[in-house]
View 1 (tube, rainbow, N blue to C red):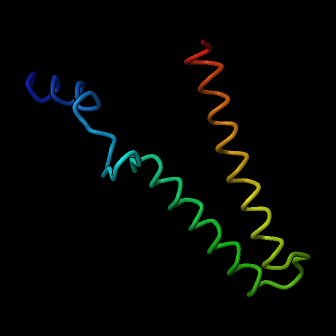
View 2: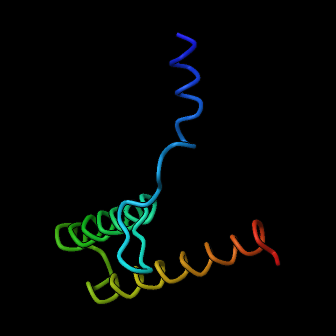
Length: 88
């Protein structure tokens, strides 16, 4: 049992976060999860816009909002990384 607990506690150290790499481009697991999350959120919001009456948004508005959210997330994540982990 101690062997399993040691393995379990050190599992994150042994996982390679890169799914694949082409040249200088790396796709990491958390990047893939961001893509999946935004895709699911967009599909669900678009479905609700079509099926539920009373929304004052168009699909173009939804696309603009999602684009702003993605850009804000990337800029905020980079700013947070620089401020908290690498201020130099």
